[in-house]
Length: 293
Image (tube, rainbow, N blue to C red; front, side, top):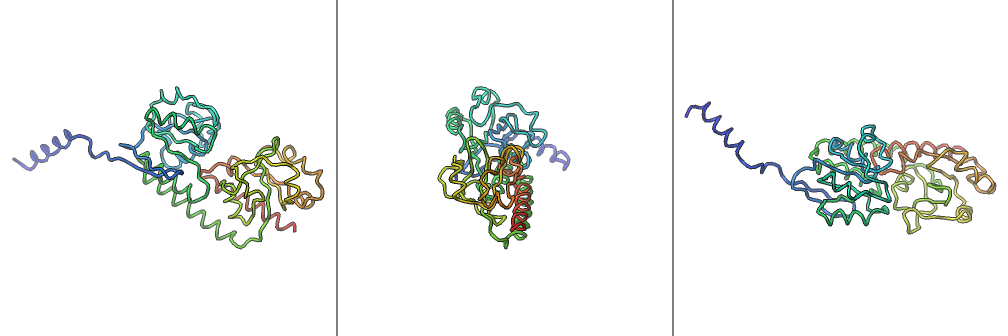
């Protein structure tokens, strides 16, 4: 057989072979469970805004076929059909989308619904990064599960590089005690296991309610007054609206020194790549607090 004919024969044989080259992919989620798919996911449903951001950053945006309410970044995510919110999911609609993979927030109120999705054979990646390392690992893992390992690896490397720069910049800052307010009525905060506390620590701050057992506990005004934080930082709403009530406690350090501040909760409260934008903003605010000492 001539060389050209041999080459054509080889090509024909290769085309007839089963798609064994499509290898299974695996990644470890934030509960330590290994998620294995027979092939990279082509249809993905995201059940949390931070998960949506992670998927798009890892190169898997084109595979996202369903999201939940408030998945507003990047802009493309706004055009993806909604399957519910953080508390209530439309399970029938999720199943109808025929996802290869669901990425869900296992610490949210919808955690029981994730088990129901698994019961009908849908693979679930549970996502709730509590520190910067977990975000980088999620970028790598989700990129791998979606068949975009290169994009996920690059995004994780860029994230770690920027994180290192911030850590070096703020590692020697004097400590600032902070009450971090996520809701006014009822008055709510976040404990030391939340991503926000990792950001506070990076910036040289201490969460006065870090030791509470609940991830997002309700606290009293009296408890905040007793803690006497040097700064009160709210992550939602306009400053005058969410923080005005604290001004009547004129003896608190935060009030006396004018340290009633706001940050963009859409950046800082979501454990996605943009948390570094929120962390940088937070660090700048805390430097202003130190300057007013």
